[in-house]
Amino acid sequence: MRVVLVNPGSEEVYGMGGNCSFPMGLGYIAAVLEKIHEVFIIDVLAEGLTLETFAERISVLAPEIVGITSDTISFQRAIDMAQKIKEIKNDIIVVIGGAHTNAFIDYPLQYNCFDVAVYGEGERTIVELLEKISEGLSFETVKGIAFRQDGRTVVNSPRELIEDLNSLPFPARHLFSMSKYNLGSGSMLDVLPVFTVNTSRGCPYRCRFCSNNKAFGKKYRSRNAQNVVDEIEMLQRDYGAKGIYFREDLFTLQSQRVIEICKEIRRRKIEVKWECECRVNTVSEKMLLSMKESGCEVVWFGVESGSQRVLNYIQKDITLDQVRKAFELCSKIGLRAGASFLIGLPGETLEDIEQTVSFASELKPRLEFAWFNIYVGLPISPLYEHVRKNRLYSKDIGHGILIIQTAEFDRSMLESLQKRANRKVNFWKHRKKLIRRAICEIRNGTINRRKIFKGINQLLLSRGV
Image (tube, rainbow, N blue to C red; front, top):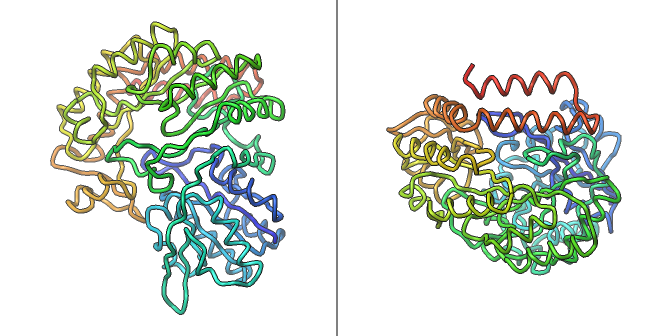
């Protein structure tokens, strides 16, 4: 069968979306399908397509199946594209998946442009679904989907999680126009290109603001060192990768696995710089030292708040002392450490936000860079349910995205606090980061005048100019 997989992308709205990064989930889906079907990719944002040029591509490719991935922010664009597909040929079966479907399993099916919704981990589900479609059989036995039958929506039972992640093929990057992606987005490495790699799924922690376990569950599953380093070697050989970003919920949960990955990198004499995301209560001096020796330069910690009361409220299950210790260890070993913070959480006070900014300042100079993110209600975490139930928002901007407002603050106030936090904590760090990135891009021949002016503008904004 001829299958087209679509990433609609999203315009930036309220500080969300607009990021042209590689769609890892779609890459895995493409990888399992290309073994059986003829697969094509359309990444609307990366390729700069309009709705009209997207329709032209669909007409030329003439697929039997179109699979669209969508988070909540991009869901309206997914609807627009699915409707356009049906206008071209109503017989094309349109399958919707991604984060928004995981949040609201049967929600997409209120739109007639979608025929089937896939929820949970999609690799096994999509293969079985397309097998049923190609054979003209019913969907009733396919786990992990919702579909229409006799005018009503049927939600099948969930599919079991994939236990052996080593059994999955690497994402089918060769089907994508990799040059179109920002291969370094969010990275603090001073090399390009930087490729994202996922080595695990699932998180056993219980943060109230997070909904990732809706797709991947709470059970932690991971790829082994051999499999992970095989992918790094492939990325260097086929794409000239100079940096790797292990961008996932919890790279460092299993200390021995991380050390084995580091040993394997050294054993194969691979020269690569890399960074990862982790929790402050899952790192040790032994692990961090092994990471440093294998090429790790940057670690990101989800700190979220400088108020212990707020950390307890959102069930982060860490302490401020653990944060301090983690940053001290990174400084001692020579790893650059970044932190992400959330401001505007329901239940937070202005005093709590001030404590967060003060705590971030306290972490300097061990703190390389801090992201101060404004909390936005995205389906369907426990905190989101609390926000909706208690109507702690000023606006629903569509498909369940809630702009927070409490008795303590509104969006405008939070944006002012965010700017002030960046000015106080990040200005000199931001300048250093921009200079490092500019030097890196000059070396790689990828910098242009537009990027230089954009960097200067960002720097001025960070000062509140």
